[in-house]
Amino acid sequence: MIDDRLARAVETTTNMPGRTGWPTARLLAAHLLPHLDRSTQRDFTTVVRTLDDLADVLSDAGAASEELLLRRHVLDAETLLLGLDHPGTLSSRNNLAAARVRLAQVGRRRWWGRPAARR
Image 1 (cartoon, rainbow, N blue to C red):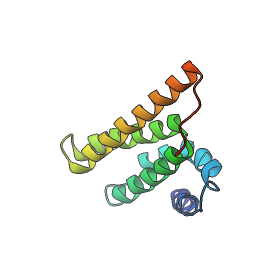
Image 2 (cartoon, rainbow, N blue to C red):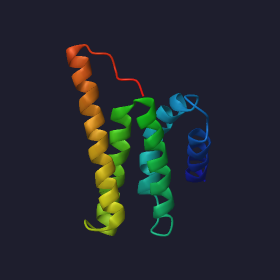
Image 3 (spheres, rainbow, N blue to C red):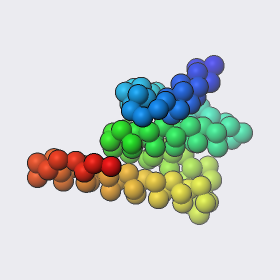
């Protein structure tokens, strides 16, 4: 029941235009990790897609640390369930690497006092 509501909240948030869903996405991120842990093999793909969608919104919002947390959790679960060489696991590994690059760029900008690049 709670997982269905979380999934609907993510769907609503990811469909919001522009930046309107960004604050909600940041709040939802912490609550979705157990959602993946509670998933069954039957709904695993749907739950992973939900977390990936939210991670994409967090990336757009510049919330690199929250995005990294979701991407790491998805990769760990996929590695355990699907194996290291599964295409879904490899895609998640790529998503995690991209999130790490974005987080490193944020850290460098803060260190050097540079403004963030505009998209």
